[in-house]
Length: 126
Image (cartoon, rainbow, N blue to C red; front, side, top):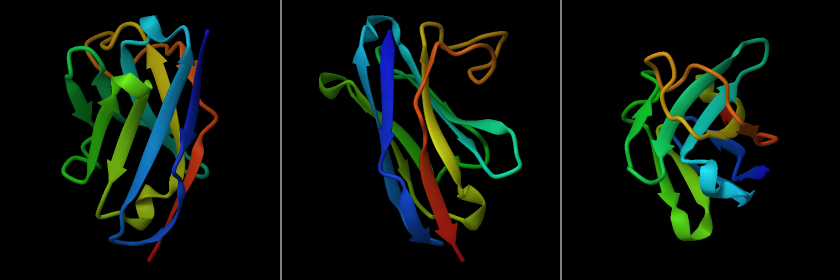
């Protein structure tokens, strides 16, 4: 079992920045691939970014490219999402997820995920 705990959410004005953290504990050896998702009110959960914590490869949703950066600290079993130039449409609950296989059916954002965190709220005001 792997436990994922997100933190760092909050309220910020448009154009501001936040850094989210996802701390993993338990049997983390199989969680090679770490993800950030988000879900806005009344909308589906969307993939935001992923990182392979051993190979370092990463990718982003088009909507956040150039504004968000995913990074890792393997010594702390923690993955970060640095968010800058935030927009009101970035308002959502942000979730961390993990699995062993990074790509599924040709994409990094498809398929089942093994573990999920409880989410952290990000609110961006205009």
